[in-house]
Length: 326
Image (cartoon, rainbow, N blue to C red; front, top):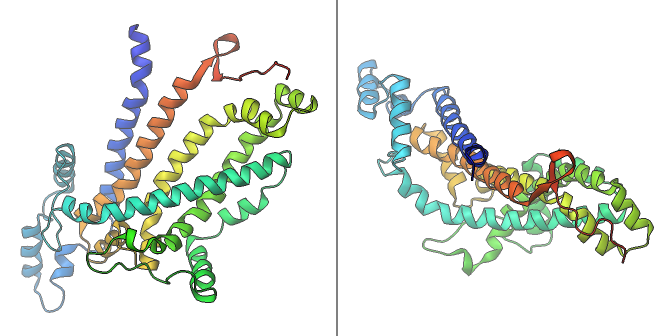
């Protein structure tokens, strides 16, 4: 392998690392801009200015922002997320307790998103690329509206699901999987609508390609045309959209978990913001950014592996049997 080839292979990894460092800077800056801090909130009431200063010094909030950022970055590099300012427990321990519930919610929501998106795109394909305005409209609806409508219909009107997703102490989601349905649907519906709106353009471009139009004119079955001639052009954008949606789903859990009382990392973030527990806020805010960057890196690497040389040295997805008659 030549040095140039090694450089091309490492370029996505280096870009992901640089963006990850940039994400830490953005997250830290955002937490710095929050009004008040844990020292001020914990000494509210009759505390004097000296009491507030002593509490801020005890929590390490009196140090310059640049020093605190570098210290936090060094801790992240060592796998140390710091300690909660509210309870003094390691942030990693807090997340270890909540992360399985959030991971299960994101996994179910992502599976529903893929299923709904594939169904919508199949209908669009069978209609020759027409339609899709409903997906655009659903993508514009705020997540709380989806939650309210789903809760009112599925939990209130039909009574199929519990209105809240509270787990009993020591309980498991496996004991009652219905607890996942409402928050997962709240995440999946707008995500599927957004993905359909994004991929509809790629589907339309693929349908306008000459070999696809020729295959359809020759009367090949629609499933065969879809599998052989259309899907190869959708793999790369679908991977990128999936990576984008995964990060968005992780970020969107905060609202869904709070609305339905689901005990995950999103609910932990909301409670941490209320008391300005900066280490917990930083870890919870950084998580979706890192998930998004990892997904985009994997999508980029997968796209490079599936790309084949095209005309004039260009690369693109392979088009199997583009000119074969059946």
